[in-house]
Image 1 (cartoon, rainbow, N blue to C red):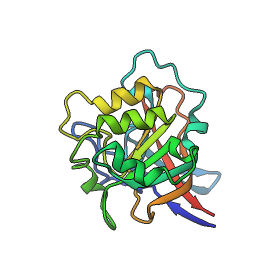
Image 2: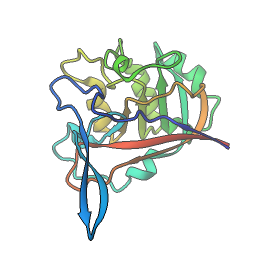
Image 3: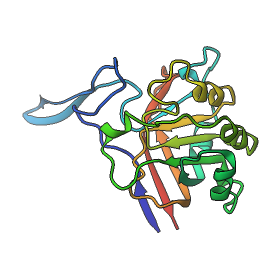
Length: 208
């Protein structure tokens, strides 16, 4: 069994969406009956580093899904960013229907620093690709990019279409160690009760 960590580390220099607060991580210590106890204080937004967008990121009526973990864990496919649905079908239809519910798009070749992801994707997800995936019963989409829409997008059509269909989005994935193919995905967002918009997560791929 091979486990591939597809999560970026978070540090004080982790890049963030323009206008967002940079993470602040610093050590603290306290004295307890003569013993020195070390802790770390963290301040950051829910969309820092590798994270999950919940439908509540753009939907006022989203109350929180009980199905989060069943959507975020299961068979998935890592495939290239397609130019259209026909190209995507060539990559995914040889894999199981269950795996086609979770698609992780790999845009970068080789290692990619997180900074690079904030200029990606260059092109929007084609509408016929989204239609095909939603018709296949997709519950999750992810990518090694900062957003499901190009950073210059003003109306975020991919986000809105996905959220209308109760899909989750994983952004800022590190897929440098993953080849194209089928895997098991385990993506666990922090259980932040008041956060309807999203959460940082730890995500791994398993190849058995």
